[in-house]
Image (cartoon, rainbow, N blue to C red; front, side):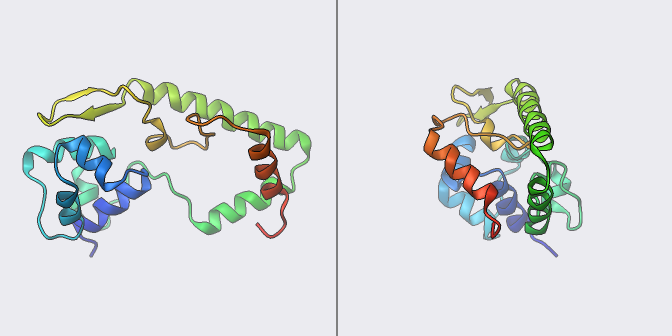
Length: 166
């Protein structure tokens, strides 16, 4: 049976949220998050709704063993390998279509999450985020928008995609 703490940690990490970031969003200490994740204690009832909202899951996911995650965004290594193998055998037109589809899905994901991105202050009232936290929320494959993409970075990415050992 998977514990509340284990599921909490897995979900937080899958969204690429650090313990300090989650603590700040909830208005608690980093140590409190660590204690929850190791099942030393549990969050107060007043924090649970905020926790579910931030992690984009419901109580069933965190508290019940065997409940399927509502917002699954991680593929297994085998799934990634299979996708990469298929991409490599595509001709230029096929790769162009895949790249186009990913770009459009990324744009759609940004639009869907832009109105639903909230943070939590110490009074546990939701307020609009002033910085872009969408990298923690998107499910579609997407490029980073928080850094300038250089030619060197593009070449590096292309080399990886062309590497037979990847």
